[in-house]
Image 1 (cartoon, rainbow over the protein chains, first blue to last red):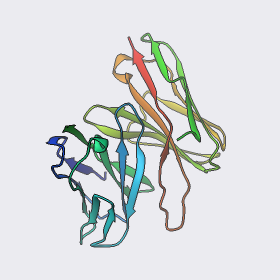
Image 2: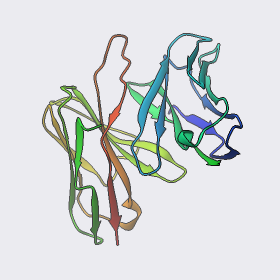
Image 3: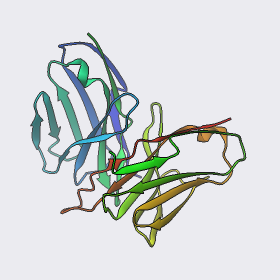
Image 4: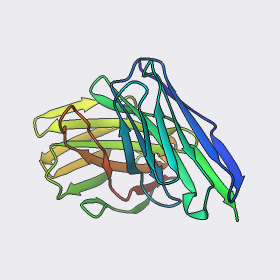
Length: 109
Length: 115
């Protein structure tokens, strides 16, 4: 079945440093979604990418969808303590979303 | 999201007991899902339902059953709980949207511990 792999599993940075998480699918995706889960909270939708090579920005967050629509990345510029949490990618396939394992981001203020 | 509620929020039970987790939504979405979250394993789909008469198994349905009582209600049952079902359980809803976007709206989660 479809698999979505996400790396790294954990990332610890100093506040102000950049952060990137990568997502790779075993199959071509029709779209990819990103979610953020704050500690003790539930996943919250951030964004969806649909087009090959698409790049979207939300303030300090930059999302990319690969040309082959099998990989994606989330980059945070100049992290802040409010960025702490776990970031999940999710690929749409076979009538349901398949989530990556998530990248847990911790930040040293 | 306050539009998706789960009860109970926390539950401790013993091996062999039957447990039901309930989910209600006021978003008017047709699609509902049950996920399980374990550290390092992300969110794994247990069951999903695209409407009241539609129930589908996800990737880890063994040991679980579901009931879609109404458009707004979707319950998850553990017929005979075992310790490795200790996890955080999330209910989610979505609508198909144009182009099948299926953005997931998650409930607050139920933390289940099986002793």
